[in-house]
Amino acid sequence: MIVSGSVTDRLKNLGARLREERLRRNESQKVFASRIGVSVPTLYKMENGDHRVQLGHWAVVLELLGYAEDIDRLLMPKESLFVKYEKAQRPQRQRASRKGGK
Image (cartoon, rainbow, N blue to C red; front, side, top):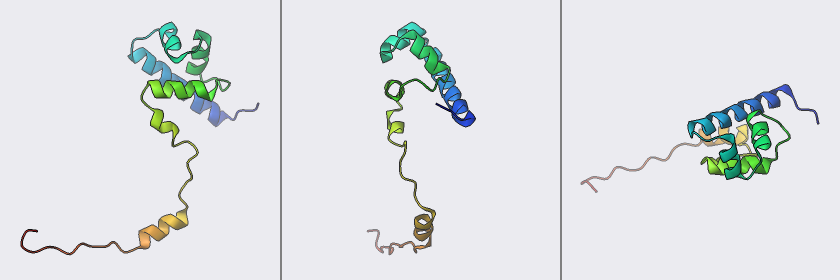
Protein backbone atom coordinates (compact mmCIF):
# COMPACT_ATOMS: atom_id res chain seq x y z
CA MET A 1 0.00 0.00 0.00
CA ILE A 2 1.31 3.41 -0.95
CA VAL A 3 0.53 6.12 1.60
CA SER A 4 1.03 9.76 0.65
CA GLY A 5 3.13 12.10 2.74
CA SER A 6 0.12 14.17 3.76
CA VAL A 7 -1.71 11.09 5.04
CA THR A 8 1.39 9.99 6.91
CA ASP A 9 1.69 13.43 8.49
CA ARG A 10 -1.97 13.45 9.53
CA LEU A 11 -1.70 10.00 11.09
CA LYS A 12 1.46 10.97 12.97
CA ASN A 13 -0.30 14.09 14.28
CA LEU A 14 -3.34 12.05 15.29
CA GLY A 15 -1.12 9.53 17.06
CA ALA A 16 0.72 12.30 18.88
CA ARG A 17 -2.59 13.77 20.07
CA LEU A 18 -3.66 10.32 21.25
CA ARG A 19 -0.43 9.96 23.23
CA GLU A 20 -0.86 13.44 24.73
CA GLU A 21 -4.41 12.59 25.78
CA ARG A 22 -3.31 9.30 27.34
CA LEU A 23 -0.54 11.05 29.25
CA ARG A 24 -2.91 13.84 30.30
CA ARG A 25 -5.07 11.13 31.85
CA ASN A 26 -1.94 9.76 33.52
CA GLU A 27 -2.43 6.26 32.09
CA SER A 28 0.31 3.86 31.10
CA GLN A 29 0.26 2.26 27.67
CA LYS A 30 -0.59 -1.06 29.31
CA VAL A 31 -3.65 0.33 31.12
CA PHE A 32 -4.89 2.38 28.19
CA ALA A 33 -4.37 -0.48 25.73
CA SER A 34 -6.42 -2.80 27.91
CA ARG A 35 -9.20 -0.19 28.16
CA ILE A 36 -9.52 -0.05 24.37
CA GLY A 37 -9.03 -3.78 23.88
CA VAL A 38 -5.73 -3.75 22.00
CA SER A 39 -2.21 -4.93 22.74
CA VAL A 40 0.50 -2.52 23.85
CA PRO A 41 2.29 -2.91 20.49
CA THR A 42 -0.93 -1.89 18.69
CA LEU A 43 -1.32 1.16 20.90
CA TYR A 44 2.32 2.00 20.22
CA LYS A 45 1.58 1.82 16.47
CA MET A 46 -1.44 4.07 16.91
CA GLU A 47 0.56 6.64 18.85
CA ASN A 48 3.20 6.60 16.12
CA GLY A 49 0.73 7.06 13.26
CA ASP A 50 1.04 3.61 11.71
CA HIS A 51 -1.44 3.43 8.81
CA ARG A 52 -1.95 -0.31 9.26
CA VAL A 53 -3.98 0.06 12.48
CA GLN A 54 -7.62 -0.91 11.98
CA LEU A 55 -10.18 1.87 11.86
CA GLY A 56 -12.22 -0.04 14.44
CA HIS A 57 -9.48 0.50 17.02
CA TRP A 58 -9.59 4.24 16.34
CA ALA A 59 -13.39 4.22 16.64
CA VAL A 60 -13.13 2.65 20.11
CA VAL A 61 -10.53 5.25 21.16
CA LEU A 62 -12.66 8.12 19.87
CA GLU A 63 -15.66 6.83 21.79
CA LEU A 64 -13.63 6.34 24.97
CA LEU A 65 -12.24 9.88 24.75
CA GLY A 66 -15.61 11.48 24.02
CA TYR A 67 -15.15 12.11 20.29
CA ALA A 68 -17.57 9.49 18.93
CA GLU A 69 -19.73 12.13 17.24
CA ASP A 70 -16.74 13.07 15.07
CA ILE A 71 -16.90 9.66 13.40
CA ASP A 72 -20.29 10.61 11.95
CA ARG A 73 -18.69 13.52 10.11
CA LEU A 74 -16.30 11.31 8.17
CA LEU A 75 -17.24 11.10 4.49
CA MET A 76 -20.30 13.30 4.92
CA PRO A 77 -21.48 14.77 1.64
CA LYS A 78 -20.11 18.24 1.15
CA GLU A 79 -22.52 21.03 0.35
CA SER A 80 -22.17 22.14 -3.24
CA LEU A 81 -21.06 25.70 -3.81
CA PHE A 82 -24.10 26.24 -6.05
CA VAL A 83 -26.50 25.26 -3.24
CA LYS A 84 -24.57 27.41 -0.78
CA TYR A 85 -24.80 30.39 -3.18
CA GLU A 86 -28.52 29.82 -3.68
CA LYS A 87 -29.11 29.84 0.07
CA ALA A 88 -27.13 33.04 0.45
CA GLN A 89 -29.19 34.75 -2.28
CA ARG A 90 -32.56 33.98 -0.72
CA PRO A 91 -34.01 36.99 1.05
CA GLN A 92 -34.29 36.55 4.77
CA ARG A 93 -37.79 36.71 6.16
CA GLN A 94 -38.31 39.35 8.75
CA ARG A 95 -40.83 38.97 11.48
CA ALA A 96 -43.39 41.66 11.89
CA SER A 97 -42.95 43.44 15.16
CA ARG A 98 -45.77 43.05 17.60
CA LYS A 99 -47.19 46.07 19.25
CA GLY A 100 -48.39 46.01 22.79
CA GLY A 101 -45.62 43.79 24.14
CA LYS A 102 -46.98 40.50 22.76
